[in-house]
Image (cartoon, rainbow, N blue to C red; front, top):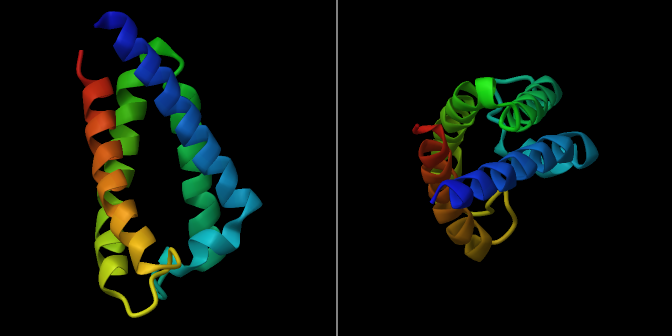
Length: 119
């Protein structure tokens, strides 16, 4: 079980780093998710940096717990945006089918972060 958790931890870190880097490579992909009352570009890059920092910190055992709790907090912050996306006429993610798939994936990442954060 310890080996499985370590593998899942490293995969999680890789996903977070990839997601964070993607905020800089494809900012237009994240723009529709950002509420109008927030500065779009700043918010996008801020969360990109946070995802990269947390993703890297997952690989450093003394910081792993805090990093995964940070990702868990971000995923909980993003959750209402993904729920809202399911019910939009034109989902930010593109198609309703994708929005319906993305929502359970959000719950998967929340559970994954929680699992890794537990000692």
